[in-house]
Image 1 (cartoon, rainbow, N blue to C red):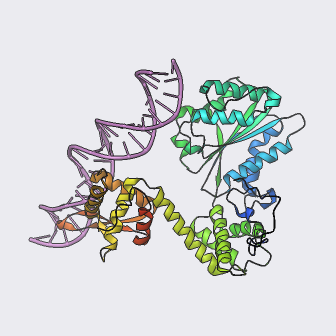
Image 2: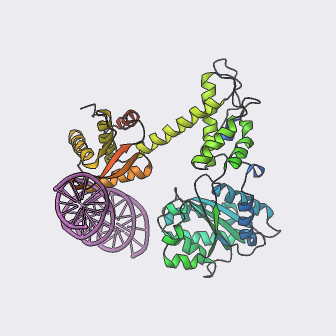
Image 3: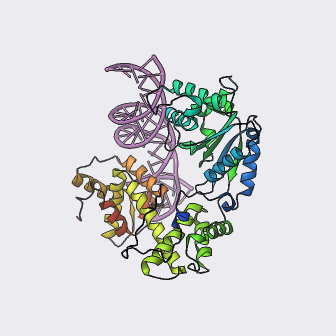
Length: 410
DNA sequence: CCTCCACTGGAATGTGAGGCGT
DNA sequence: ACGCCTCACATTCCAGTGGAGG
């Protein structure tokens, strides 16, 4: 995520000095955090969240907040933004610290505490050194408490993607620290989750200690997406975007997921497509291409990320689809083909039961489609499995895997 | 309307890897 | 270094399923 445009550039005719399409592509990067006035359609969420954290600004305890919402609905963005404003708005004599933890990265209690301590610690003030690793969990906690007391009246901690944290005692210990008298500094936690049921799945001890308000983020609608994209339109050169480009991208994204990240992705792709074509304007057809491209990318990612056994199962399906007029096959038929593949590739052969579950998982991910059919007295209930994307494309993607490469027709 | 087929899917149970405290 | 615990993945067993066809 670091961009370092070299400062001592030499004009080389091999590379164009100015870009025909983009003027500031950074604005379309995934990790780009827009300025405050560029956050769209989340005013309500921002003010609600700010209200919960209000205490921190005056040196009292902020409330804990649990934020729910799908990906790309601005949860992290709004949280970070509010934290920043809280820091700026802190009253005289009130020291506020804020920290952001990505639980996908630090997914154990120890890791999270250690990076929390490291992030909040200002060595020149506290004279404490936080080692990256090597201490027991409890030592890290002690370090953290010390750090906090030495520097802050209150801290706000953002725990992003907390559902990926495989241990919820962190939540409990953080929220109990203050009342247990371990620290004088007050702690507010913003926990962010994609899953609505997150709190239901945590145990009772955590539920009782992590008292919190809940906040729901709705997906962006087409209007908001359009505005978000228009706000970033100056990533493009003046007049390069045709009028219908942004509304179309917004419409695509809105009907599919309401995910701002993906919407912007499509816009960027459209720009790239236009550039490669040598077009002087980004047009509707470029957006359509970008959209299709995004679809394929998503698919590639799904298939690439699948475990080996799932790939073998998919390969069996593609093999059948390619070599026959039908496109849907009974599980038993697919399983036979799968057995052949496994044997040929010298892989373990899983049981039919497990095989069914693997296909079901792929169906959940949107790679295959399963239909229930009934053959009556000729054989009761069966499942029919069908690939959603073009079998050839799936096949190529699977064969990119080194373990699968030996499988070349027959 | 009852039977019957061959697969489905829930439940119990086993196994190996990895994180954690001691 | 050690055992403990949890989790994901896998197997085995078996009651359940539901419409075509008698």
